[in-house]
Length: 361
Image 1 (spheres, rainbow, N blue to C red):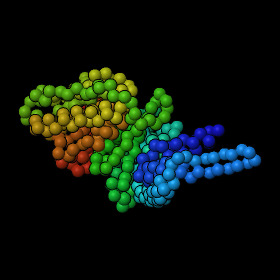
Image 2 (cartoon, helix red, strand yellow):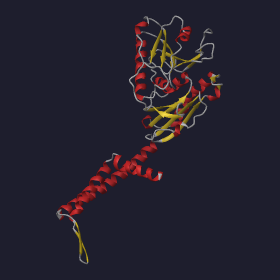
Image 3 (spheres, rainbow, N blue to C red):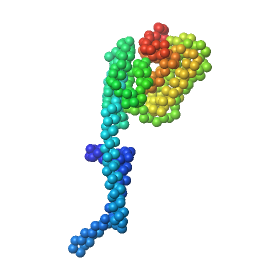
Image 4 (cartoon, rainbow, N blue to C red):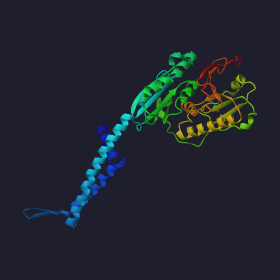
């Protein structure tokens, strides 16, 4: 029964919903042919019973209908077959680079490559960025090796695509990893034509697309005049799912201005709208551009946001901005933000791993 329903759904999709010039020609041609058949009267007599099938349509009109309708049907069939060949060729040409980043969770119930939205077509190239071997009891113990692993992943991702042009590549990203490593991975995909971001839904224990409703919430934007002219370094906190520990950030950056961006409702699960995330990224870009205009040379970034948001912000990194240094929060550490990654910038082409200098908290 389930197979019948699936086949029926495919037929309905192909006949009624699929938009194609060829299908329209077949539909219109079939209608004309069926209408023209009414001009052929058929009379059947059995004993005293006579059955007549036909109408008052003139025979010349019926012939004209057949002359028009049959070529339309044949032309539509040719068009459909041609479209099918082109679609198969495009599917063989396209590549889906599926990037699954693991860190805070060793293994997902379903691999990302098996949870893609149905509309994505192309040959799948799976790449897993796995830093779980460097964790101990849920804490990233060897963050130096983990950083090098993610840093070297960029070349591996490029090699997986070969010579495929960016226009034929769709990247699908999903993961659960420390904030600086996720942000760094996002910087790898700033120049590709299309990126589809997914996230791990802990409530349903499954991958999920950003298909939630947009409730209009967004990030607040700080007043850039709070940064005195000539300031070299500032701190910037972005609170999406949780509130950033601003007191700990201030202890790391004594004497530096600390600006805050904050969602109207800071809570877990407020990030499932693609439109809302784009608005977050636009606000982040505006703030960074304003800081660049103020002459700031380095921004110390403290993020409390879901993986998909962090990755998206990393994609928007502009090397003409001030250098961006992204911090990792470890609640059990004496220093709440014990390490960070300096992202690629106009001053440093390669990312740099940094240990927080202060020992007080």
